[in-house]
Length: 88
Image (tube, rainbow, N blue to C red; front, side, top):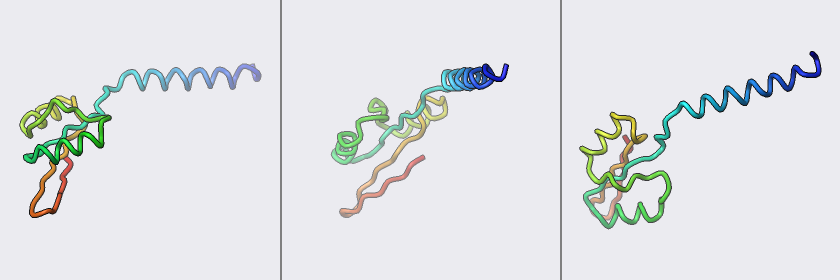
């Protein structure tokens, strides 16, 4: 029994990790919102992974966030050569 104990614990740990990972929803994507399409496109070009490009306005982003389809949304604004971002 002392020989099989570590292998049994290893198996239980792997099984629990697999079950935990398979039960979580993959909502690591974010939406990027901006009135300035050039600014939005530049951000999307630089950050291709984990971005849902289909969501283009704040109303859709809020709905998808409430449904748990996205992790959040990033609002980009540019005022007088100053760029600001807000993550919700």
